[in-house]
Image: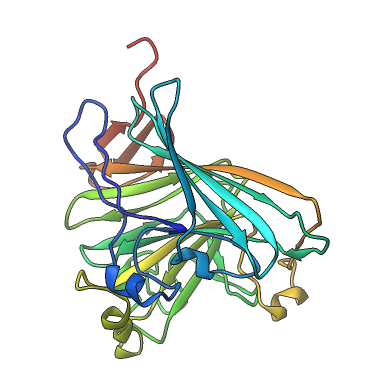
Length: 300
């Protein structure tokens, strides 16, 4: 399947593990592309393509440095382009890396749509750690973040209990990370990549009213509601109205090639999350602080 499933990984020197996804075998059996778990690799004409749930080519290998790779890929028939991903798990680090490659070997340009979409559990005091001071809608208009004009702290899942579904493309910070933290369980996850490679940071929430909660029954097997956290090559997933703003569509030209790396890691028992990188995650609040290494320390 063109979707990476559940993964747990211990931190160096620790005994904590985290799963960043929620399995949904029922939806996969139905053969529809929209599922509530794993990481979708969305490249091509539009998101939630059929390759997210259909069988795709795959290959596993042991690498010379002790890491292990799983390669997945296929042709996106809607755009006529080819994509593949190297999912690499190192021998001595808590993160795993996804390296996405995309090639337009067709004779026509296509929509430059490249987003990685992870499904995360919505319960447990979920907090979105997305640096920025505004968010964009699909139409390119900017709104306040994290606290809106009505006083809702949108970075807290539970405070999004108004209106219908939510789609936040967070901007306003030249930041190379974002993450999630489950306060009630004191654990989290983080995503790291170079800002100039993937400036897009998106949160999707179905909505906490019955309008959105019906999808818990339709898209999950019983693990509760989920939310989507995404990284992208552009600032927002634009609709036609966004073309009247600085946030416009771009074309992926014939014979163009694209490659970019992302790092995904657990954040165990820090009380929260302030920053994360390939080397460590840390949290500082008042006089208390905590950190967790995600790679071996130099010289150790």
